[in-house]
Image (spheres, rainbow, N blue to C red):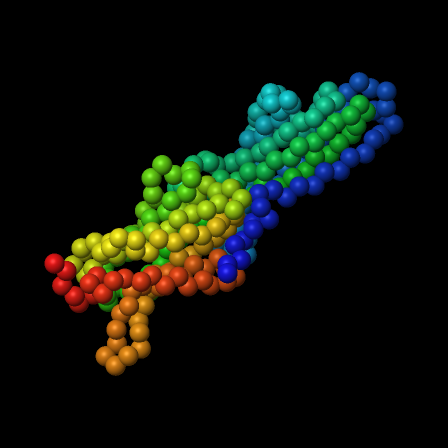
Amino acid sequence: MRRLFVWAAGVLLLAACHSEEGNRGTEKARMSLSLYADPSFTKTKTVDASEYSDVNNYMVELSKGGTVLESVRYGEMELTQELEPGEYFIRAYYGENVAVGYDKLYVEGSQHFTLVKGDNRQVKFTCVPANAKVNIRFEELFFEFYSDCKVLFSTRYLPSAFVMTKEDADKDAFFRVGENEEMTLAFELKDLQGVSVNPSGFGSQKITLQPRDFLTITIKPKLIDVEGGKIDGITVTVDDGVIFQDIPVQIPDEFLPGREIE
């Protein structure tokens, strides 16, 4: 099956803690924050996201007990500060966390940590993409038999299916996903006259995604090697950068090119 980039799943965390003589006996603790950003997708370096690499652009939220204590850009934040002992949650993010959108990369990281009296704690974590990136491609031979193929994407975050066609080939669509997110793919072909070919039950497939997955969906005609040649539908190849998975999509004979449909 597919390897599905487990994008290291959302966040790479590292925390270090030590006490110093100067803080002993005080009623507060000291936190020092170091933020890093890696907007790339696993095994893939095709994202031009220089603005996402600049941690000074990131909003940082520090909260305690569900109450936000501070919300400020990292570049404007006091990185070393005294805090009351207790349990804290800190997160940083950049971009729009939309259900899906072209060029709508969203990068986020977070960490829970606990401070005790006299602590001098260094908090470090890395923000990484919280999306799956998807694009579609068509083999040239496809257009000898069909004029287009709509790909309809459905996830739990989408009120209706998101559609990509040949006009969207090679665009990067960023989908909001959680861990082991289920996505449904459906297909609607158009013949050479531009008429939709959408028989009941045709082409629906389910795949599982993780944050930082990068999928390329390649659509090509499925040909049977017989005398004179014969087309038997289409093949959808899902490439996650490591393993290719072919999904044969069967089409009833009456919907194949060259046949009249009454």
